[in-house]
Each structure stands twice: as structure tokens, then as C-alpha cells.
Length: 369
Image (cartoon, rainbow, N blue to C red; front, side, top):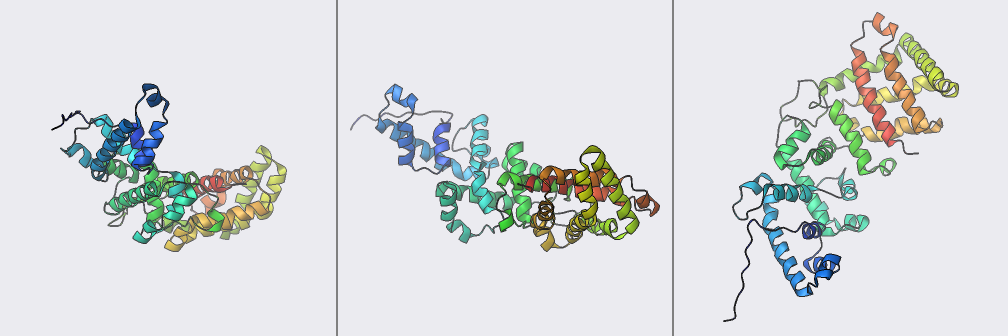
């Protein structure tokens, strides 16, 4: 028999660069060819056969580890391989990282088996290998399924606990789950210019301020709530904000205060435009607020911001900054409304501020010129 050499390492050696190639969806041969071009290996004079053999060993190792990565707490408990805690953290974090372009294509779609089979189009559009697209699809579906089976708690904290992810990555998955659970529409033509970061920004603002899991959320959560659902008490209170456009005295005082602030701090031209269009724009905004009690309106909240508020502002030739100034002035002045206090409606001030402040941030982010 020929002599056989056996090489054993403990803990298991994992090459992060080869792991990256595996995560990107490259085959063993493709990964070997890419490694062959690395300057460090060229200088050492490492042969193609050795690189190929090492790549094969690494890929076999990743295959063994992958089933534990799909349920990260199992990685520390498994006895198959000895992997250091730091290496475990790296494996998990990188496995759940994603290409924002790929996830942007998944948002707003049902994560069905049929969609998984049709990821070729997303792969071609984003120039991300199909294998990587499938991993990202499976990870999003895996996290979402885990959240839907969990009740209560902060969404990001729950994801961090279940999947051992970093704060930043947990927040990103929380935004994805928030949009999926609430079926937020992201695929309409007027929203296609928005990037994943734009949508995640808006989702995070709503998640932090409008949901049962937020600091401002009520404690009246329904059984089965995951922390991603909108605060129903808040949504019911939003309907009472119609007084800001239906009560003539409140409307006129609010208009006067807003125009005065804009005229002094910014431009008289903007103040004049606000004065003429004040009630119309406020009505558009508060109609969106009142409609959120219905699930269909929740689904279309971003689309409504674009169609019912951003587009009218653009028709007035307001830029993003001017629109932001107007919305900011609405919040700042609402606390000073004597007519609101006379009517004993002070309780609406925090509700109004809670809605308009988040709306301002979302609209500002969506307002691509």
C-alpha cells in the first residue's frame, strides 16, 4: 500500500476568504480559479492541485456546518466540529448578511416555493449568483417564520436572541420582517426608485414609533402579536386628528402659526405657497392617518405618501427641504394652538406629533428629486 498522510487540525481551520467565495455562490472550480489568481498564493508558488484540494476540503467543511447555521444556537452545541466562539460569530454573521439589491427585489413578494424556483430573474437582474440568491431567500424566510412563531418583545432583540446576529444586522432583518408582516407595498411604479436602505429607513421609523413593540406603543397588544404590528390604540386615535382640518378655528390658527414661522425663518415665497395650499395638504396627510386603521391602507402607506403628498408637493415646485420645513412647522406649532386647548383636545397633541414626525422623516427620505 502507498503511504497515506493524514493531517488533523483542532479547532477546525476555516479560511474566511474561501468562506466568502462559498457564500457568494461560486462552485468549487470557480473558487479554485479565483484563488489561483491571488497574489499571496502566487508568491508562495502553490500549485493548482493543492489549491483545488484545499478548496474542496473547505467546501466540504461548509456543507457540514450549514445545517447548524440555519439554527445558529445549535452551532455552539454541536459536537461534530470544534469551532472557536469567535469563528462561530463570524460564520453566523456572514451567513446571514445579504445583498441589498437582492432583498429589495424580494420585498413586497410572498416568499413561496414558486418564487424560490423563479429566482433566476433576480439573479440576472442583480448579477448575484443564483446559489447566493437562494441562500438569502431562505434566510429571510427562516427569520420571518421564527418571528411569526414568537410573541411579544422588541423585534430586533428577538431576532438577535434567536439568530445570534449583530445589532445592525438584527435591525435590518427587523425592518424586513416588519414590512413582510404588514404586507407593505413596495413594488408599485412610483416606489421603484426607492432602494433597500430607503425602505428600511422608513420601516425602522414606523417600527420604532408606531408599533406595539415601540417605546410609545400601548400595552394593549393582541394575542399572537410579534411586536411588528401597528399599535391599534394609536391607529384609532389617528381618526380623531380630522379636527385639524374640519374645525375652522383650529385650521385658521394653525395655518397662521405655520406661515408666520416659515416667513420669519425661511422665505416669504414658501410661506405664501403654504398659506394657499395649507388645508389641502393637511387633509391629504391626515386622510392617510385616518385610513391606517384598515389593513389595506397600512399596506399602501408608502404608496400613499408618494401619491397623495409627495406628488402634490412636487407639483407646487417644492423641493425636499421645503417639504420638510412645512412638516416640521406643523409639529412645532401644534402645541401652541389656543383653539385646541379651548376645546379640551390637548390629548391629540402627542398623537399628532407622533404621526407627523414619522411621516416627515419617511417623506423626506422618499422625496428623490
